[in-house]
Length: 95
Image (cartoon, rainbow, N blue to C red; front, side, top):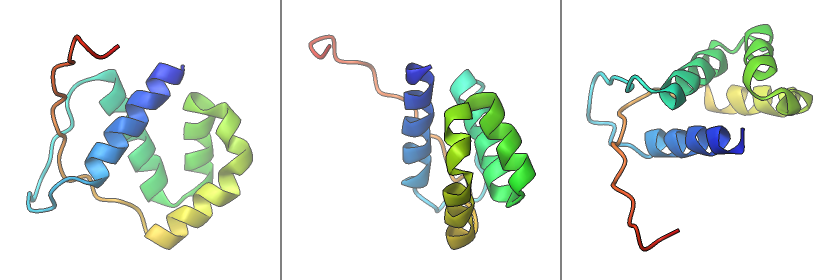
């Protein structure tokens, strides 16, 4: 579960720092991208019940902080997906 959360966090960070010059973007067909898409749709909806349903499914422990999550959503207004950055090959020297 931690690995999945780390992948989603990495993907979110990569997407949030992506170059905004591209008009449309496509997520890769991967489990992490599907989970990110579900989060983005739930988060961007601004609907507490929709976001609570996402948290129940993927991050039940974070549901206790839903007020903070919704306040963050209110401050940001949501996010636009711009582009996915392909992963770099792993360096075998790093473990």
